Length: 456
Image (cartoon, rainbow, N blue to C red; front, side, top):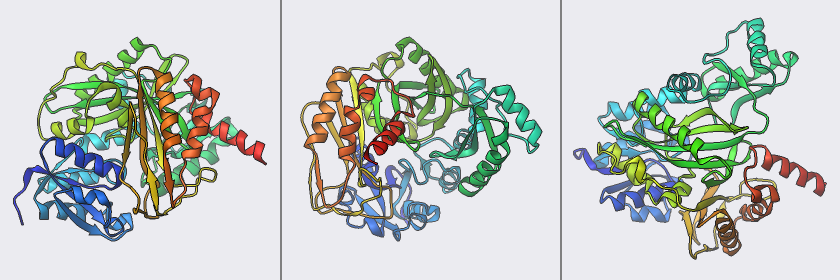
């Protein structure tokens, strides 16, 4: 077995984020090992790695979620660092613990911090302690006593939302409008929390009526330095899944954003956070309310890269190797506007996945256009994984120019062999509410519902 090499990175993920990590490693002159499942054996990006190693069959639980297989792959190839990307094991404290126990380094926060911020109640408690504004509600899990729960809900004021303490991805949440709904909602949410997350704890917060989803990108090193790199608006969501993201968030006072950003950076220093991360907020009536922290790189990181000129993934890798940040807060400047559309292999009307062979593909270009994708003509889109095949990102001097460029880029894009959601994106971008900017997290679903009613 080779010696552990801190200049070798194992990419413990697949698809476009695997390719993005490979590119960052190349920039840093690091050796790259790419883990892959049997379903991804023919993926073109594997040819760009110094070494590729199979970690198991197609099912994610036997490959990309197989902790012993990934640790063994790192040890067999001498990789001292492991990059988990996003999804899969990227926010699993047990994976971070296994990496640490093996004498390796995870490109991300340590297991203790990951566990703290992954538990929504612990995270809220930490944010309150560091001065980050939170959604009204107690910083503790709900008791089992129904009457005590009713009193807490009344003190907050209906409507309220019940959430799984270990939740994420839109699961384990239920809105309650009055006392009569509370008992059943609590029981159902607890069942979901146990089934999906293995943690039955539930907490309660005020349900905001028409909030926006605004997030702050942060990056911190092990030397006490922490930066906030800007803000993003990710309010265009369907079933809590983001579809369009942009930076900066339109129509919000920049001084308020800076105030929140500084608090997020201070929180990173307080809790000992190292790596890239994202503080997610609901924004309503001029106020920010913390909801969770993602302790990994985000799908939507390119919009922040486009407006700041930073390579967040390369910086993330660099701080994991023990290096100090080389930029200071006053050097981070947002220039222009950027918009990202997630391109999925799915039916644009039913949202049903559309796996299969891509027979032809044309990607757009031109000033201000970036395309992050791992596929091309001849690539097979397996049914085993998420349907996202890439992201189209546009940058402009202002939001109007970014919108014009993303519309043009989408119209130029063509993919044959599988269905994609590009037609839906073009319709969403033409929506007057979105074009004006500042829509709530409910805007897209309301628009989809109204479109469905018109077609009926």
